[in-house]
Amino acid sequence: MPDSLIVGDWVEILSAEEILRTLDERGTMESLPFMPEMLPFIGRRFQVFKRATKTCDTISKQGFRRVRDTVMLEGLRCDGSSHGECQAGCLLFWKEAWLRKVPAGTNFEFASTHDKGSDNQLDSAYHELAARVKRVVQVESGDEPTYMCLITEMKKASLPMAWWDLRHYWADVTCGNRTLKEVVRALLLDIFNWAQKKRGGVGFPYMEPGLLKKTPVVNLNLQPGDLVRIKKPDDIMKTLDGDGKTRGLRFDVGMFRYCEGEYRVVTRAYHLIDQKTGKMIHMTEQAPCIMLDGVLCHADYQKLCPRTEYLFWREAWLEKVS
Image (tube, rainbow, N blue to C red; front, side):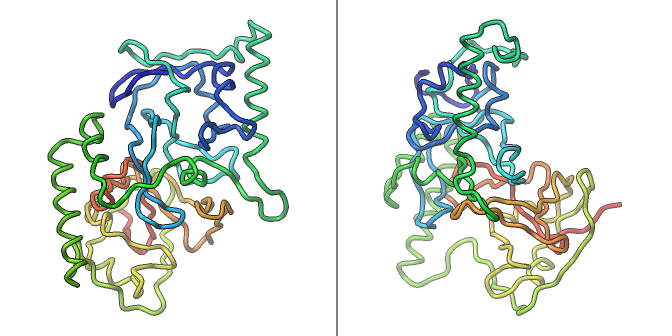
């Protein structure tokens, strides 16, 4: 296992046989599953994009969790092909035990042993690994299957992190996730918001609640590749209810950074796995989640969580650019 992988390191994903030795019968290592969507990358080289120092608790909403010995690799996102065609596009999490550090170099195509078919023993290991990780993806059968993925299992695969524990910020700097300037800003913001909460004041950033009881349905029929402009904050506020939502989707303060910018549509998403229940959420044709190229969670106000997930947008917050 490589020691202390940092942002920019080059790694090679181990063979099926080596990965298989790290997994339990559920196809997990320390509760983190090796997913079928990760199989095509076996034997190939990639750069470390970020180190998973921590994660938002998106399941029980109880703060943040500490993650150990795990990284994300450049450009490797889940395509949902084995998870009911989930369209969330989450970054894949890789245990360091599944990786081998290699000298810096370019990413080259490396055919897996399974593709070569040159070694029966290793080819058998690939099939055994594929069978094991695919067997437990769908935890329950029936009309409404329950899925197991990296995100649904993240709470089990992480440890509690006390609100006053600041070591994760130093880890962000030393591994290359963030600059010292970014960390100092986030730390000062944490302190300010803690003080405001104590005295009953307003935290930063503050967003006025919406006023609508019934939010608008807007269908621009946006398709992948379309160019859109995100509306001004004031115009978006006019579409929100008292919970800050439009058609059930919350507009978060971290989305302000992208307002008035122009971006290409990546996906018109109708199917997303509920991270808490593992059930698939199905959206209507009138209210899909729009995902935009390069518009990702920067976690400025979420303790610099490194998950870098796509932000979801309602068409009521966007306007099409001719």
